[in-house]
Each structure stands twice: as C-alpha cells, then as structure tokens.
Image 1 (spheres, one colour):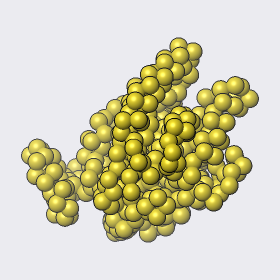
Image 2 (cartoon, rainbow, N blue to C red):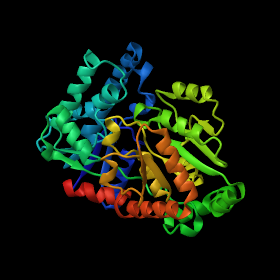
Image 3 (cartoon, rainbow, N blue to C red):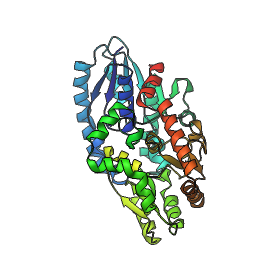
Image 4 (cartoon, rainbow, N blue to C red):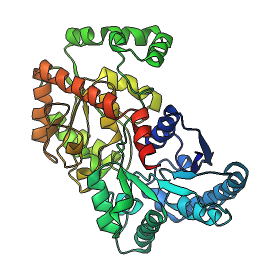
Length: 402
C-alpha cells in the first residue's frame, strides 16, 4: 500500500506530526508531498483577515499549488490513499482536480482537526455569520467534507456536531484520538524513563537539565512552590479570564505560582485583566520553542486544560491535555461530554465547573493538599496515554480505516 500525505498542511502541527509518525511506527511507507504555506501565517486572527493579508495568502496559495502540481506528477505515482491534514480544506479541491488526470482513483482520508467555519466564526467570533467570508468558510468546509472518503475527528461529540452543522452523512466520520508524540513529551525523571530514545535524549541533555530531572521533587519540597502551568493560544475556548481570577483567589496561598505560556487573540485583554487585578503570582511567557515545552510541563505540579465553557469546549480535548499526561502530570480541566469519552473524574483527571474561578481554585487546592490523589491522577493518566494515545496507537487506529 502506498500512502501520500499531501498538501499545504502545517508540517510541525502536532496532529499532522502524530499521524505521519504513527503510520511509520506501524511500518507503513508514507510519502510526503508538501509545500509550506500556513507556517508563514502564524497568527490566524484579527489582522490576518484584512484585505492585504488575504491577498498575500491568495498569492502564496497559488504559488504553493503550482509547486504541488509539479510534485504530484513526479512523486505521486500509484498512490492508494492520500491523507490531507490540518489545515487542508482548500487542498482537497486542488487534489480532486489533479486526480481527474489519473486512471486509478485513490481514496482520500481527511484529518482536518477542526471546521474552519466553526473555529473562526462561531468559536472565535472573527466575523458575523451573515457576511460573505463566513458563508465562504461554511461551504468550503461542507464541500471538502463531502469530497473526502473518510474523515477523522477527535471525539464523537465533535463528529455529531459537524454532521448536524453541515447536514452530512455520519457513516464516513471516524473517531481517532489526537494523542501526543511520546518522543517529544515524556516524564523527565530519569528513574521513571524506560523508553530507549528517551534515555538517550536525557543523557545528551545539559547537566542542569539532568539535575532538574533528578531533583525536581526535592527542590519543590525545599522551596514549597506549587507550580500551575497553562500552555496555549489566547482564544475564547480556553477561558483564560477564569484562570486569572482563580490565581487572584489563590494569591494568599503560600507557594502557589502560575505560569502562562502563549499568545493570541485575547492576549492584551487577559494581560490588562491581570494588571487591573494587580496579580502577583502569575508569570507570563509569550513564546517558547515547541521542543522546550516538555521541560516546562515537567517542572509543573499541575497542568491546566480549558475552562471557557463555549460550545466547542464541550466537544474537543485540547493538545495540552494529551501532552501533560504523556509527561505523567495531573491535569485539571473543565467538565464536558468530550473529556468524559476518554477520562474519568478523580481517576485520571480532575474536572471542575466551566466559567467558574471558585471551582478551579478549589480543584487546585485539592491537588495541592492531597499528594496521594495528585499522584494517582498523574499515574493513571500516564497509563491511559501509554495504552491508547501514543503515535503508534494513533497509527494503528488509522490503519483500520485505511
């Protein structure tokens, strides 16, 4: 079987990397036919939608498709299955046109991760539902889903929503957990590392990193710091204002420190809220390299998920949750139907009320005061990851449909 991962997808986006690596770990020979596009447009909100940004995107898209056309006819001979990842709605139209020139008709597996219309218009509110841009995104989504032979989404809740929103046949939609890359996210305590690639990586780390891995818990005992970590884009889904207000409620609790890594649509608003509340227990970091995130997660005692209580938050499980449990960390996130498809409250995750700073504060205090519960949640979450959510398991699940 010959499989080609095709298009202008974000090459380093976690879901794309996991699919490619997962198939390779299941001994599948997968070819990449890729031209970089979306990596050039990192902030896909606000000014991104202005006329000059849109014109630049169109020009970049035309150049990318010209290059892809050449690659298609030179590399994509005898392909059985094309996979199109995130962001790939436009790529399906282009691929379908190219397939008109082929005698055999390869199948298309689409792993979009999100609906463009739902993300930009409904969740982030970047424009009115009635304007031309919103209608364009709606029909791009709907037609791209119709053109694919199999469509992968991350939860059953998400599948049900997409099928209802676009009035689509549910039979070709399949659930595959997003998972995380275990070669990037893993526990850094040396005594707990058994994966040979992890061992080699830790040995090659600087001595300061090795010291951190060996002495993390003893250092926390000495300083009495309890580190709460959030990683992500500043979008409504995440409910960042509730994290900020929970931090304010915990301001007088000895040793509790928050670290928030990321930037995005609501960054200025959240920083203003923090400044107005005169919060002293939060460190803001706007950017960190992807391969450095594992160190930040391993320094934390608790990793936070999403708390926005938006419609979208009820049907997705964010990357940060998978990355945290891959590092054997306890996670607190807002209660939602999607999260309960994979996790059990108090066993391998701790759930709190959405849009409720008091509930989040109480959950943090519960894990701070109860080491046994925190360790149980962290260990069970890690077991869940090892059994169901590694790259190899994701690849194995995809092969059922391929």
